[in-house]
Image 1: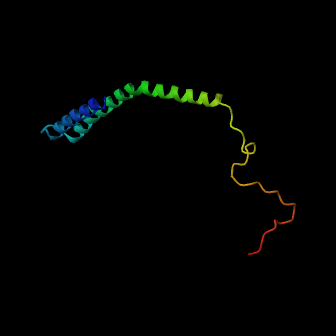
Image 2: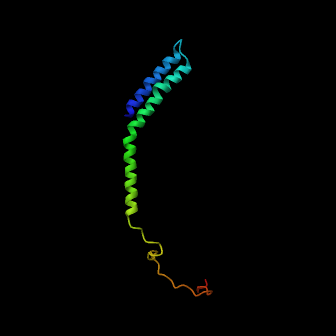
Image 3: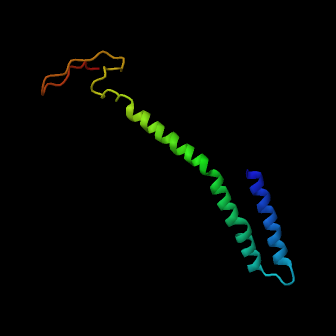
Length: 103
């Protein structure tokens, strides 16, 4: 698909160059030729040819959102056990700092 688009842009570019270098042609005519024969129709054709891919992507995104909505919620962080690998220490009483060895 892109090969055809590149070939068409090349053909239209050559038409524009011929328009610009012709003795009766103008640069404005060349620009208009490039836009009206090349860019605008090609953009329309590529947009129409990509519509099935866009529709498929929208359906896949909706399907993923539906699966995510149906999945059970993960437990909250406070519900999970401590996974730090260290023994849990006892919480100090209010206002009493923990005892430490002096160096």
